[in-house]
Image 1 (spheres, rainbow, N blue to C red):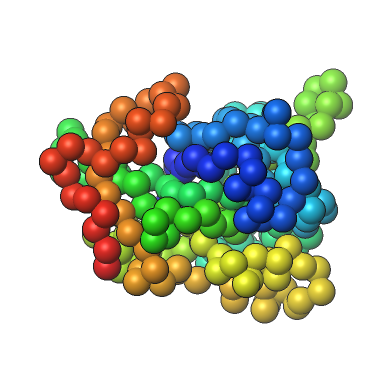
Image 2 (image 1 turned 180 degrees about the horizontal axis):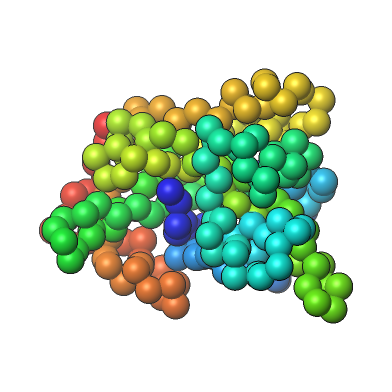
Length: 229
């Protein structure tokens, strides 16, 4: 799964890398993005603009907004089988922008070691996502999203069996396009090449969602440093 990620880039780098417009004064970096937070992404509806959606998909038919915490991820293999995901994947796709994600390796029954995982030099990337609009009791619209996951590659597999569906830069706009047949769009959901990624251990302070400081992405002292596949 993908339960935490980072977007440590300053606003100008986000604009330059993803070619989107937004008010930089409203943008903030995230060193421990967590479910339930409102986070930046790029939708098929407005591909040239940065949008803000809450992490944890709420299908339009949901009765209880708490269901969103159970829908932070959507498995690529079953997107067309799940009622919450089959409509959004057809017409409401998005790019969830990031520069790393966290995953936890079980050390023993009580301990899990967090890792920061990303592309080489922690370059920015986009994770394939889906979004939805839900209305509360007062008919106020709330936009939410889910990150799609795939089987882990060889770098991530020793830590966890799933990873986010990271899109190669050349395929990001294809994921947003409605011109491609759905079967071709779904073929974009593949494990990112392990040879193009790296990881290192970080402090277990990332376990607490309230922590969101720059030092969270620092390598753990005495830990694995910049391990490559």
